[in-house]
Amino acid sequence: MFYMYSFKKNVSYFLIFLFVAIYSAQGFLLSVLYADERDRQFWDRRYNTEEYIYSKEPVEFLKEHVDILPKGKALDIAMGEGRNAVFLAKNGFEVDGCDISEVAVRKARKLAEEHDVKIHAFVADLEIYELPENTYDVIVCFYYLQRSLVPQIKKALKPGGVVVYETYTVENLECGYKGPKNRNYLLEPNELLDLFSDLNIVFYREIVLDNKKAIASLIARK
Ligand SMILES: C[S@@+](CC[C@H](N)C(=O)[O-])C[C@H]1O[C@@H](n2cnc3c(N)ncnc32)[C@H](O)[C@@H]1O
View (tube, rainbow, N blue to C red):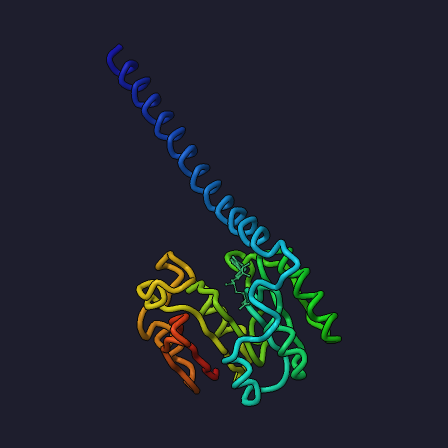
């Protein structure tokens, strides 16, 4: 009789444990899925205007260094409204560009049409999408920081391929400049350099530009 009671009690505990485990796992999964959906909606809302919120002009750092990039196939990671992707296409690159925001991708295609160039612009959530290996001569990433992408960027470059990266540092937050408020999206001192230290570093700087933004910029060759 006692054994029967104890067995039933253990089964009850096990069922309660199982229920809590399944419930927690489901909660975790939903929060991850919804986080991506929240990002997408956030960026779609930001881009949902006629105006190009990051302008139609490429990032100065890209403009200054485009001539030293190996010609061929380029990828613009989190390309936004396409200012850098279109600039690369105008400079003779065959360009892929992706972003989580469908609105941004549409605007990037429109910008390419305005400039009479072709880009392959597609919607992709970079938290899920896997970059194709050994494919690109150039990969650019501006003002988007996802540390888990770095190993993929290295694999996606062809031998001799070049990565161009520029984004905000923690100094941007400390100085109270416009930009991300979440430290996870900001580079620590020397972090960008360390992330690509196994490639050949062609150029690196950490700089405050025009008293407006604190950034790190890097060019590295595989
Ligand atoms: C500050 S904007 C920079 C856009 C562009 N690189 C530029 O310099 O104009 C950051 C971009 O990251 C994109 N983004 C955010 N999370 C993403 C994700 N998980 N996958 C792909 N793109 C994402 C946003 O839609 C946005 O276009």
